[in-house]
Length: 156
Image (cartoon, rainbow, N blue to C red; front, side, top):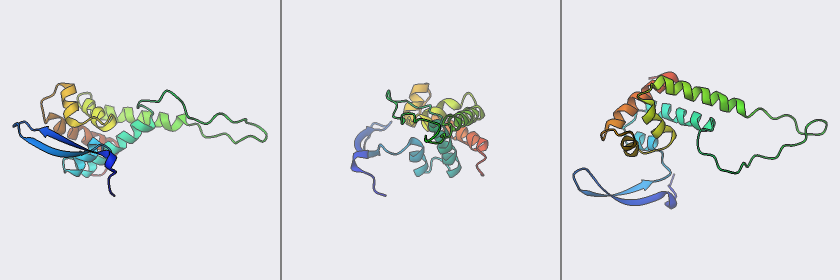
């Protein structure tokens, strides 16, 4: 499927040796998707990260807009609409799964896991924010995703 041109950004980056590289960045691609597409995450690790991100989104843990766009309540009773399912139950279930998955990853691994899988932060930015040396994040993220894959019972 072609990527919309609005999602592609041209950048010139300098590598650690000082050489310049011209790259195209797809802003619509998640950091996990980028790592997986380049063979840096296994299918199992990618699936675990996507399940974690899905639970994070369903739990409503992301930033919220200031305006609620939910439909206004409808009169109940005779002639009114039937009761809708409680929207908080799936949200609470997702929040419980998210918390359990983060506990399964462990306290030293959940930081990079949250930053990359849930918040969509790039690996380099996450390493810098955590004060880690370069390329350490990829290794630690792999360990964390393996533990989360075990939690979600994704087959090896």
